[in-house]
Image (cartoon, rainbow, N blue to C red; front, side, top):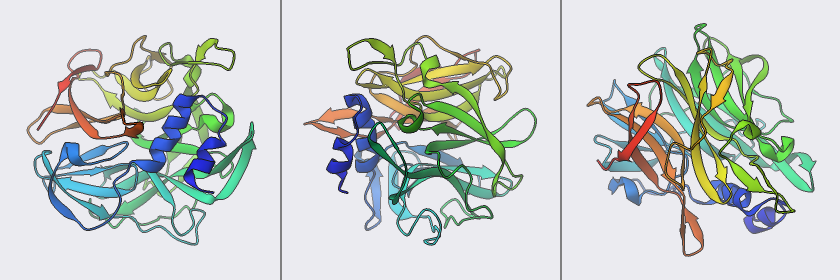
Length: 338
């Protein structure tokens, strides 16, 4: 089924159609490696930046599964192909890759990403076919890869579409994957956690819901009758602590047709919450799927993508914002242009 046919079969509100289309379209296509490319010339959804202390380089990945690297955040080299998945696994020979992240942990580098096998359908809900899609983790000895499969061939249930996994070490010292259970199946997206093995090679137990899309006071949509209701989408969770130790999570949804990022805070200081949603978004309209990192010079930044309508096409460009974590809450500052 081609892209347009797939999208038109989704009986969902226009904002959610845009969300799915953007995952299919705007990642940088692989090709010859280029040098000295300005950040705003790269087309990339769901950007994630690793500031690697060993190599003193910044590594950026995201949807599409390719890698860029930079010495200064201003000029970039890439894109590089860095994953080597098993063609005989559930992913198939050419899986789609969304929202990749690279985390350094105990001397290795771990590649958290969403993989989709479009040739396998796991469910049909309200007339929409749902493809085999799940979060998974690969490993490498180097930040530039190659990233290879580990012990477990499946991290999350095969009949459950999941996406946008991130990594967190909780107060109990255990590693966890935090991810979204996609709204296309449950019609009220959730953000969940599951414990990882000590070497991250698989999962332990079952997932636990942290909160639901409908818990948010700011993400809204209209139903078929025009009634104002909570939005269904949970997208792009990323965890952080303020300098005072407060645990927060940025995540993205929609305010009608506007892609928007909000924040929630854990009252217990652990993943178990309860999670209290802030009343208002934390970034400007049409920015989302953010993450936080510190530059080699000590500046705290948020990487996220813009979501702009250019002549009827939605273009996603990686952007940087200054952030302040000194108080009890995350404060997003001005656009940062390296």
